[in-house]
Length: 330
Ligand code: G3H
Ligand code: 13P
Ligand code: ZN
Image 1: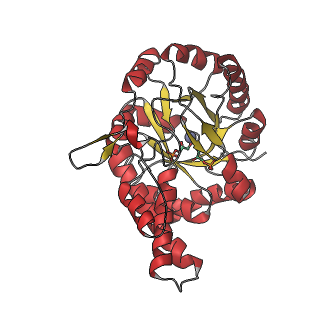
Image 2: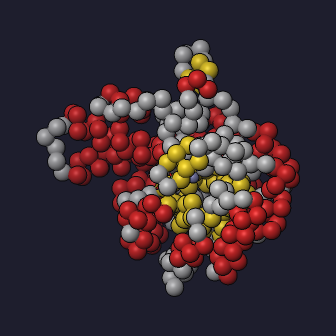
């Protein structure tokens, strides 16, 4: 058993309390490798933002869970070296079984998500409650999910979205004891969140997707005053990055994300955690493709992963400062 406390990590309780009071959202950035964790930490230290480092089950398979845990341990030392000891949580993203969540609690995670959203309401409650009972014995915080996000992304998929039903949230939260709740209000995973025909064009000819269902969020806030809400699928899919990818041999079609103003509005509400993965993937891909096209003789991985890391860091700094509002809150 390795407790997250031994690693110098924190659970999400204090982070969310401050985010709720300060009307901002804590960034939850996924990582699978060294350059990603470096970019996240550098960006969050430079902007003085708390951070949730997210690991999916796919990331654990890809990178090895022992290595990832030790990277998170290293993160605590690294931010001190960078000059500012921001609070860091290590969170399991989209845990799908009790066994996986338990394994993470037993191996240094300070927070876990149990995603039972594809089960029936009662089965979701039963599974989530079991995870909460175990995790809370170890002071580990738990995120549950009600409602399903649209989109397809590796292990995480749902053909169509089912918005969270506000009438179900009180019972779910009371019966499970979760610390936070991921809801479905129109976000989805991946880089193709909307079909162009679902969007309208603004004066500049840019596609504008349908707005998030803030009416559902507000109803949930009324039912659960002060309760922490989480937004998944919150990448904005910046069109300049998509263009760079496509101008350098990529073939991304109809890549559309959540407009930043929608996320800014959400961050000021009970939404205290915003999950972003795809934008980071896009930023790295654009930077790597650019090096490969502009310097085809280059074969030192540091020469393309370095620029990818720099691009990622700038993207995260921008999010913390201008979108989530988490800058200067650590
Ligand atoms: O929501 C899913 C995250 O973007 C993680 O994706 O399962 O491909 O690691 P992944
Ligand atoms: P994006 O695919 O929009 O980045 O969402 C990531 C996410 O929700 C991770 O859990
Ligand atoms: Zn997600």
